Length: 134
Ligand code: CO
Image (cartoon, rainbow, N blue to C red; front, side):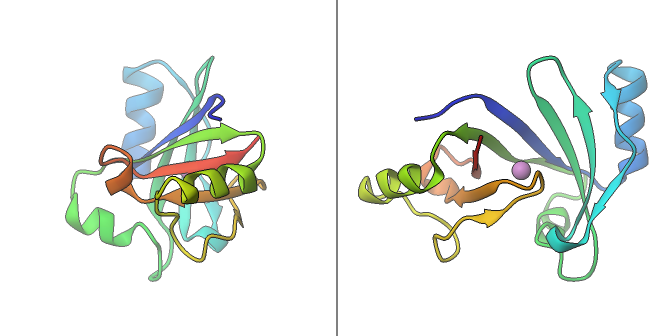
């Protein structure tokens, strides 16, 4: 069911500092910050040959990652995103297996304009999992 690793998302307290770490210390290709108000985040994309790292910072008071940053002041890994061919088939298979799909179970349009779902970390080795229809 799982395809490629689409991205790993890391919440950071300072996007400019995190961008410098990836661009200068680690020598990666790093985008300019992109505001995604409908998702409550500002994102910097780190482009690797085989996947992406998304550096996330809260945007606005209702940001879904504000609590994460409050609890992890120096930032941390937030979720991994795997590609699936058919997100509804994946959801139904996971629900049938007893896994918890967050929200109402209906895919939302994610940060890349494609349908996404999030899966409960307790069902997946303590890691928040995002599925994106490729
Ligand atoms: Co994501």
